[in-house]
Image (cartoon, rainbow, N blue to C red; front, side, top):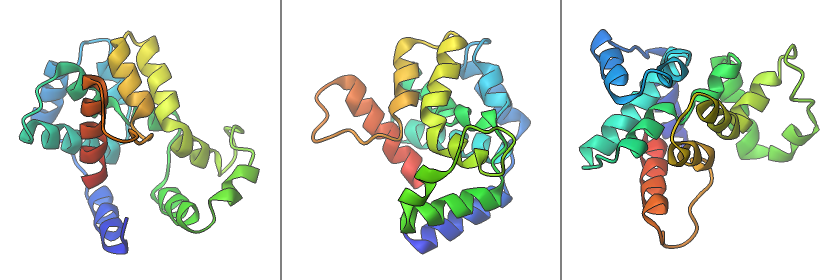
Length: 172
């Protein structure tokens, strides 16, 4: 990702908002048991998820499981408040010296670097939350794998849809 993309992403995050109409849309798409996963996310993560959803819809995707995953793919981030400065720091560290992160005791919830753990593990953590909330198995897998590139040419419908989710995620 280029510097210009990261600057746009930063500006988008600090100006993020979600309308009542968009919350109503979320309530239409997500079953009642999954709605709290979306509603607990920070507003900038909700905005991002709605943008991913809209990108997929705009590209003609209508698969309900894919669209639910679009709205919930970052729900694991809600397990800890990740400050904007921490997101910026993590992006910079991952780009320059990613092995530095391996030495931090991430799981200490009271530490300033716990947010790095949440950010790094949000796909796995989000999948666990979604499974506990009763999400369909394929939605759980889309969430779990949304940060893991699909290798080669997707062979299954699920891999094709996962790649579409990943692409929509990367441009939003």
